[in-house]
Image (cartoon, rainbow, N blue to C red; front, side):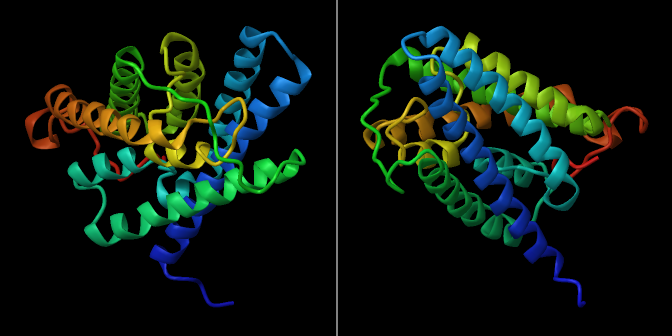
Length: 239
């Protein structure tokens, strides 16, 4: 069988990974709400743990192909660092968005809901917006700090642990991903977000991502600026 072009395989990996991530986030939220009704703390714990574990598995599965971004802020940051071309970005972003929509529909259908149920869960306040800036900032610093210091092999586990923790330390439960924002608006369940709340979440995530890019460049400069064995730039998360 003829091997598909690399860009097509990368697009497929981003599509499947994004679909899987959204299905995990929404599906575990629905399951938590049904299995632990009335106990929001326990529901959030269940949602967080399953999301973190699922994210580790997805990064391990698709990282070697596309870098396992599943997040437009990660993709844009990687472009800023020179790890991706404009052509790759133009393919990654729609693949992530379409994958997220498919994942939301799949999660809804798995639990006997309508394919699309627009969320009515409004998430709009200064504290939540600050939370998204900080959560996204931390995620991007973590990912590219690991990549640029030649520790990308542990990124799946570090990112999974970070997201699990960020469900709790951030007031917004750390969406930190524009694709996730849009996809979660299609499910009126535990993990949902009202469409009217999405634009500000996306803006704050982009702000956090931009700030993180600046900090990563300061903390982890180019190879020519430090010892060659200290920093190894890498396009994405793949070891």
